[in-house]
Amino acid sequence: MTDQFSLSEDQLAIQDMAQKFTADEITPHASQWDEEHIFPRTTIQKAAELGFGGIYVSEDAGGIGLGRLESAIIMEAMAYGCPSTSAFISIHNMTAWMIDTYGAPAVKNKYLADIISMEKISSYCLTEPGSGSDAASLKTKAVLEGDHYVVSGSKAFISGGGQNEIYVTMTRTSADGAKGVTCLVIEKDMEGVSFGAQEKKLGWHSQPTAQVNFDNVRVPVENRVGDEGEGFRIAMAGLDGGRLNIGACSLGGAQRCLDEAVNYTLERKQFGKSIADFQNTQFMLADMATDLEASRALLYLAAAKVTENAPDKTKFAAMAKRLATDNGSKIVNDALQLFGGYGYLQDYPIERFWRDLRVHSILEGTNEIMRMIISREMLRQ
Image 1 (spheres, rainbow, N blue to C red):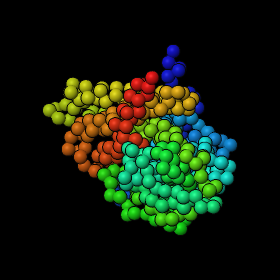
Image 2 (image 1 turned 60 degrees about the vertical axis):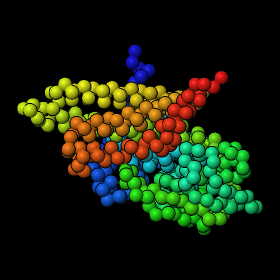
Image 3 (image 1 turned 45 degrees about the horizontal axis):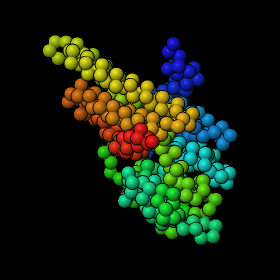
């Protein structure tokens, strides 16, 4: 019986819808977005019309209430056209879920409708110039003064920085390490919010990235998500899903490059025959396909565990992210090799995917941190 390993009819319908949207709205434009550093806000808002602004936000709150496997399927489909744009939508979904799951009615009523419709797009602000992998050492300070928190500090490498309207921000409300972190929703237009210059990146050119600065920003207490001191736990819970989505973006990018490589090697002739007729090419394609399917199977399993809130969900999310992002980059690199000199040219999509997928083994927790999470869970007695 393969039924338990197959997508359901509903999941296949969701996949089909996401693939059609990608073919119509993303793939034809992705190269231009990359080359000209265009942020495709209109396209992203069209994705929200399909419900992709609140994929796993509850239906009660206006989302489409899907699970993490459905989310991964959607991200994988969109990344087939543009991993950068798909990852951007993933980050927005992570913040929407955090507000829906942990927010009180006041903060949900204030922001969720606009976030789900992507009238307002949301950023996730955890990383700082001085705290990357050591996220719990963050220093952005929030001091309670009456019915406001006064926030000061900076966040680094923020997707949507300077463009997005909402910044779901981890702040320090006490000196108590991870237990002293509190999550606040901060608006772009609040006095004291400013942005650094746009970062000049290797890839991910279709999304803006900048430092976000807070200079005595007064944030209403009602904008807190969860209780004081719960912020780090909320941030990490968000990342379980974020890691699945970024792994899914690697799957989509790798699938695209594998498909391109199969077509290219059938058409390209050297030594009097298609290069697909050489055993070396066949072995490379076979390994690429095998690694991709293994990564997808683990990621889909991890997604089911996160949806079910299984006790080992964090370990499996880390495993899936590590495997999918490492294998995704290797598959794209091998596709580039099969294309030879043409793979290095911007006339073909391979080099864009090579650049875009490289960051996936760094963000949402580096793959070294993934290994720490996995081994820590294994060794916990």
